[in-house]
Image (cartoon, rainbow, N blue to C red):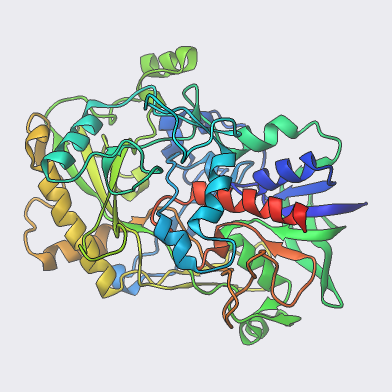
Length: 518
């Protein structure tokens, strides 16, 4: 059977594309390596850390990071319908106007992309009137949570007391300030792209979805992608299409390109892959947001550390209310450590819990955690093949720990301390759990080296642009090949100032419109 489109990856981008392309009457095959999103914990917002390392997680690890105590850092990525939108913390931020204008690519300015953000969302604002920055009839439901912990309210008040502006909408007119974070929930439940875009259209006759599929390579004939080769239930299969779209993410998309012979020729030969189309930028330009936890003991037993109880779970299952509605990272903010920066260079994530090492480490009692997060890293890394076997995990080298990046994070830790020691936290603040004796910037930098972790935002490995290192053009077509596209977070030339789920959905919305117009 021949399809109009084969989509590789049913994550934040793939589900969007499947919906929009089939709505236009296109015959689509959607391939997903993971299994359906049936785990109970996917729908329960506060349960997302339980998905880490589970059957719905690729469970990636980086190579040892020289500048971070030679640690191999854990990178969770979704391996199920909805991809990482089914396992993440559900935060909805778009980035900054300066991000898209700064890409300096035709059709990708802020004014160009804003309509596609709006098209994707149904915004349920706390403001009294609608905003020109939001949409109100899109598939992706956005809410302020049905539950917010008092510690998160204290964080917002403390940020204001420390001199920051309160911001009720980080996706509106301006980004700077502190406030409660908006989440992709619908009536208290996680609302992934599988919920929003895919599940409502599964009955369409022109959509075929296959799960448990491992794509081995894209089939090329005379400079054109004609289909894919993959394994399913132990069987090797080939399927053909007019166009093939990679939406497997910042690790999966470059890995599949390289397995197909598309990428840096010398590297491909070194792992036994015959180069068929040289593109030196495939797998390069890897960027990510690095965050450092600053946890405090809480004098009052109000945190989420002990929220996992049968009564709270029952309340959630029956009414979709209570602490289990929390996405843990309930509040945050955007600040300019460098006052001359054109836009925020640091983001705060605040959780009313002990959130160290992705939630795997547990504190002894009640805590809250401030997490300064680097928004514009200098570090650039890469994704490479370890072998020609598609079942072998790719090598992930983010090159974390550039000195300028660590200096910004240390300044973020200092500001986090200032916020935590302001008056609104007086009733809650106990000792610093990990850093009480650390005072100098050098000591705080060592803390960053020991405890910094990914904030789950890898991008850039199939960069959009026109230069020698670009992988796709501004229409997201792979340079030098026909019928082959990449449409996911890997195409970002520079990481955005914010969480990357919303921009990935926007990219897919815009890309689908472009395909249908072309």
